[in-house]
Amino acid sequence: MRLLLGLGVVTLCAGCASSAPVIAQAPVPSAPATACQADEFRHFDFWIGDWDVMVADGKKAGDNSIKPIHGGCALQESYQSAGGYRGQSFNIYDATRQVWHQTWVDNTGLLLTIEGGLRDGSMVMTGTRARQTPQGEVLDRISWTPNEDGTVRQVWEVSADEGGSWRVIFDGTYRRKTAS
Image (cartoon, rainbow, N blue to C red; front, side, top):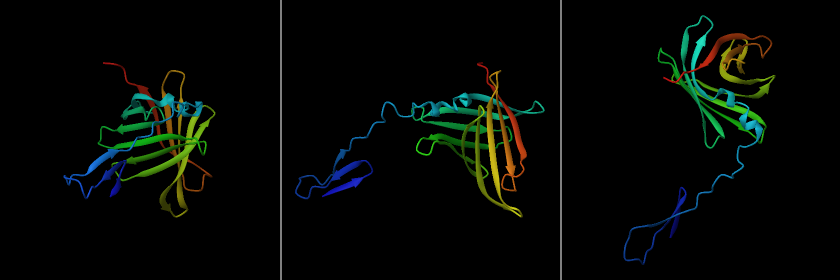
């Protein structure tokens, strides 16, 4: 009798001297050498690095680390503030739909999914969050803009009128951490 378990195949032999199952590992497909090599997969590379996140008054908001993962096919963000707020995002270019996608989760239970792409040199992603206001659902729009001095500006805006008007809820600058 053969059973499929995960990627392995277990063979149970009723007539064998031992009752121990024989496990044969199925081959694991390898990623093609050209996976994630298109230029679009590099559009968000300007965000890669270890950052001090500063707000307009010059105070530090937190620390952020963005790393390429899965052979450069995705970016993983890990953020933490001095006050204990923590979150992570996974970012990937979806080549089938030709759109960048971010999924953010944090220690308050927030789930945010946004999508978009490069617009006038900035990565801009928008999404509807499952929260209701008297006017209806709220849209989130986040933009990341690389600056000539090597910093990155992130602006997070929300709209309660289907994008008719936007209110900034975060405006920060990412400054690369210096090696110690």
